[in-house]
Image (cartoon, rainbow, N blue to C red; front, side, top):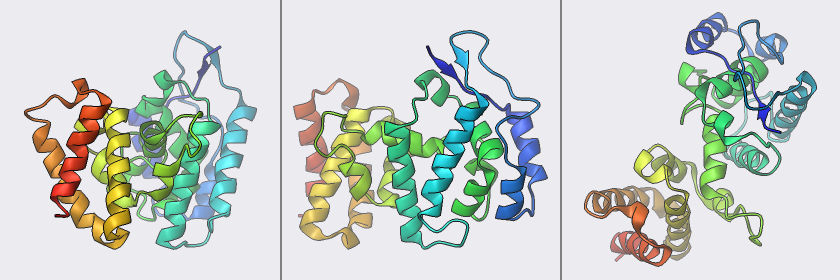
Length: 246
């Protein structure tokens, strides 16, 4: 049976975020919980998730955070590794239905009610965009990332793209709907990124990737990328990276 997750409306999310102003990580952990008085659920379609299940999710994610330095300030590398570990957790262990996961209100609840302390630890500025769902949300972006770059449980190295791409490369793909909306495109871009990085070194990839993504998007204005078969899509994307390294 489909599991329904609690949701927090945009109005309630903004109000709760404002109430957290100036709070420390410890304060936010003390304020966290598994329910909110204004939470809502989908009216039909499954069973409501139980509080103990929400507690398990909070425990698992805090455990991942603790292994990467939480609650102390962590290095950029450790935070990146945390992102990858949570993405894998979302891809393998969190059986959240897509109908729930695509709703920003679901992630607003997770970010502001269940785990606000983790959001504050991961993003010290604690901007509202990091905790109200969407592609910049602390957790929603990681679920989207797992979905986009998952090579499938049958793959011998299922999460190789998540484990190798750098943060700027994820952002360059996931914050562009014309690319992020198609998992085949995301995986092909990721594979081309890795191939290019192996040839020129990761330290040169930020600028190369920026220009290659511009090329891909430009080609997408004259060729509908979503209708290309895998061979054609692979050739087009690889050519864009090759053009920036020749």
